Image (tube, rainbow, N blue to C red; front, side, top):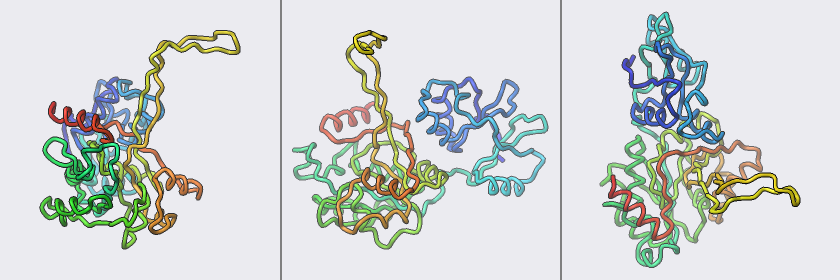
Length: 347
């Protein structure tokens, strides 16, 4: 059992404070207590994602999204009993309370989920021409553009490696030899890297049809031009917990109308909105996929991820959205690269 006060907050704390608490503790959960430290709720990463997509803001009270019936175990019960309880409820964290329901500790199925070694591999899509980045990409593939002190592709691998991932597959087409020359088999980074060679541009999903042999475990896919501190382990856990066939990371995008909007009904003015903000979610270019989904792709046939997800939806498979609150930047234009590098300098 782990004791302390670093894994719980109060119902009046904000969602962003809970996000920070979960990230700092790495326990994947934050328990909610009252003024007497009695257990009244819990918040997991999944609760946060669902809350955000339901419209709650990160400065809202966490009471709006917390689970008000958290599972707990008495401190008088054994660790073996705790493990049985976690397994039967399919949870990895369990609150420990005394007879007065005061929170005194936490049991973890894995000490730190993020650092547990992962057998799942990550496929990185790095074959695009990067036309919008010309002339920077005239002699260099876009994933090899430098952010800070290393290529975008290396940032992706380093972030995932820190979370327990060690197996990577890189899909190549444009200027592929430059990527192979730089990364090789991955041994210099203490990871394993293999390659898929596209004979023609296959879009953001078509290269999945070339994966051999068919994987036995769910795997992750990411575009090779994304700078993010997303927790890949959390995405995979979310995907598996929801029993989805495919999961797409999505990012909230706010577009503010520069004008005051007049709402009408016929010629009658109904209301006014001063510079309203339109909120939508965009594809973040990061996915979790089940091996069985690959049968819906034709070998060597171009396909983009939205079309692939639509195929799965048409076949009545569950496809899920994973809202991300982490930093995220799609380095698609020269100005994006400049902004990301400025952010790196500020760290």
